[in-house]
Length: 186
Image (cartoon, rainbow, N blue to C red):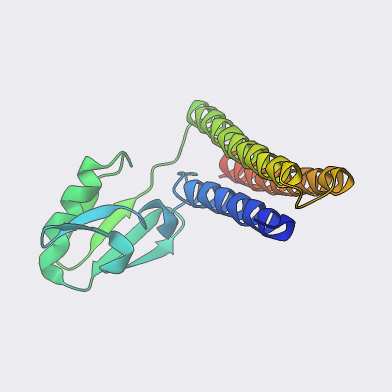
């Protein structure tokens, strides 16, 4: 691998780590209804688990409720079953055409617990980025040993990897702060 390829690989992998964290945040309940709460919920659809967003329209008529309208009305029971068996903590209200979910408001204690979970998740994302930095640095050191880059280039490239790490850690902190604020305000 050339030095440029190593840097591109490091950046792409850090971007993926941040995107995984971003997706994780979408599923966190904030006391406000958002389609992200149920988007990735898997429903048995003719024998295969399918994401809910692929089989129904999900809307938020007001800040406290979600409306799920399946493309195939025969799937109402399966969707209801998937919601009940999930860890959402919401009871689906099925009227034969749509499923209505009421998002309960969260107590102060629940909010604090959620922020704690959020911090652990953010730290895990940062650790993933640090591991990517370590791998990138190992690749650079190998390239230097094989004579592909000089010792001076190695130091400059390691600094670039460190700069990338800082950049992506800042993105994670920014996402964490935004979500924390959202949880505490909701």
